[in-house]
Amino acid sequence: MTVKKVTVVAGEDAAPEAMESSVELLDKMGLGIEWIWPLVGNEATARGLPPFPEEARAQIDAADATFFGATSGPTVPVLFYLRWGKETYANVRPTRWIPGFRSSLAKPQGIDLVIIRENLEDAYVLIEGEVADLAPLNLTSLTTQKKAHELGEGKFAVKIITRKRSEEVLRFGFDLARRRKAEGFPGKITVSAKWNMLFQTDGLFVTVARELSPEYPDISLETLIVDDFAHRLVSNPHSFDVVVLPNLYGDILSDAAAGLAGGLGLAASGCYGRDYAYFESVHGTAPDIAGKGIINPTASLLSAVLMLDYLGYSQASKSLREAIETVYREGRKLTPDQGGKSSTREFCAAVWGKLK
Ligand code: ATP
Image (tube, helix red, strand yellow):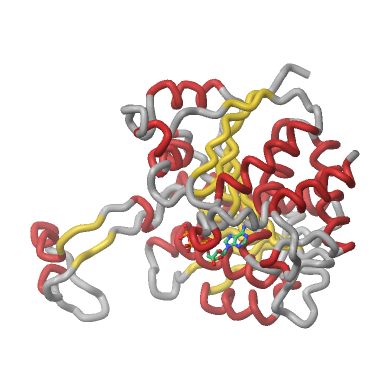
């Protein structure tokens, strides 16, 4: 196999503590991956460079994937490039309970679902402004029957759902449900949005799902209004297999799903485009525990499990996942968020102990 190159962007606050320990462990696995640490964020500005220098961008472009920590601001331009520059449209966030995960549920056994969040549009096109500036458009609000610009002093945000992006991410969902079905999952995709209010935008999203459905006769399509989905996610998470959501709902509800399984310290994600992918934990930079050496690296390591699979190291991916699961099953070397007393490094050493 040719040597794979991975750019690592550790991020800020406590995130680098999780990332450095994770990369150290991954490196010890001896896969021959070349790890490249571009100079970005605070380290770049401290040397008089912009936060996202051209060289860093070239390194990301030349890599097979990027492993990203979490950002509180300085590395946001990198994240924006990875997402919108590389058009990584499908944000895949698995929620799988394994014994030892500190879940809030009495019966978390068997929770194994994947939320796919459309990653590029919806409210995240970030077009906001003054309500008064809407005057030239002469828009009428369907609910108030008033002109949009006459609703009062305030701000607006634009929500855009395109057919192209909806089709891309929904197809990704159908294909994933099919691959999981081959592994014994039920072969079901749930598509959820608020089309009973947002007839046009969310309406388009669900329409595209229904249009694609006949191409996947082996996969059953369930469509749920998003408030109903939120309720079922909490009351019966076991009923879901693959779920596809527009960006904003997906952002919020995948964090909720992470909470069900045992918290943000455990939640991984991979963002996939047509020819690039990056992998990052769902959590933020955990500033409250920065410098303490106790951030749970499980989210980073489980993101690395997805990354190894993407890069073609499927056996190593499986071994790493199993090693993490064993450490949780034994429950002796867990970080404080999971009720343990171990440090980030001690947890990684325990995982390495199971891999050797
Ligand atoms: P963002 O808005 O960027 O998602 P946030 O400040 O809302 O960030 P986090 O940084 O994820 O959220 O932190 C929320 C809480 O969860 C904090 O108390 C933090 O310490 C905790 N937390 C997050 N990730 C981890 C982790 N990997 N290990 C332990 N605790 C974590």
